[in-house]
Figure (cartoon, rainbow, N blue to C red):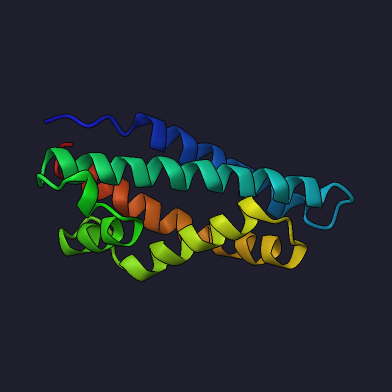
Length: 134
């Protein structure tokens, strides 16, 4: 069964490039705008990841919509070995909600600092999908 993860790969690439640009320019006057771009790209990369996870859980593992609360999605994915730590993914999701619903500079900076780890976790997920030939 094929589940297309090309959108996730593209989103991940844009997030990686934006973080690299931020790193190269973090002392510039426009660094806060680059951080905003990184946060936005994090948000949509996370959302694409979660939707793919739900699709996998429904199509391959027969889970129902009712079973697929945010926390359960991440728990199931760890249980099937497709992500390393469901609690970290839950934390990513909570951080995303915090920045999406209220603009707070310190919360935003905290989120930007998590992005390198998120990149690793998302690559792990993509690699597992590729290994399973989803």
